[in-house]
Structure formats: C-alpha cells, structure tokens
Image (cartoon, helix red, strand yellow):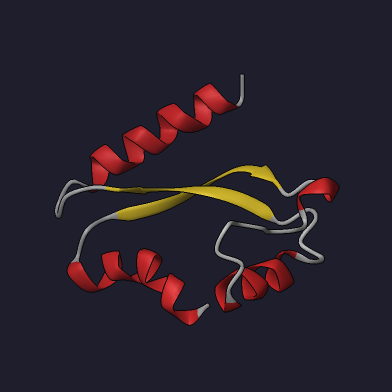
Length: 84
C-alpha cells in the first residue's frame, strides 16, 4: 500500500499545511474490505483490515500554503463538533 501514502506525504513535499484528526475507531465488524473489482488491491486491503479493531479512523485537513492557522481553526471546529 506504499502508493496510497502519497495522499498523506504530498502535502509535506509541497509545503501545504496539513493535520490529522482522529474521528472514531475500527469496530469489530469492520475488519474486512470488499469491492466490485475483486483484484489484488482488494485482497491486499482485505488482509490489511484484519486485526484492525481499535485502530483510529482519522480525517485529514489540508489548506493552502501559509494558511496554517486556518487549518488549525478548522480542525478545532471539527474536534468540538465531533465531541458533542
């Protein structure tokens, strides 16, 4: 799944501020993955999902360069609304 990491580290390379906010955790009945393609990616994602109970499910917030404060403000608003 190394290629899927580009959605995370690309922001560091380009200088865009980005933060990750934990939203929930994987439940016991969510430890599998299926899709209509049923290809090698499907199998790899299915194998990765096994034993994932309790792992965090997160939301990534990314903003424009030099707008770190906006990203932090959005993350704060999301965290407050999710905690209600």
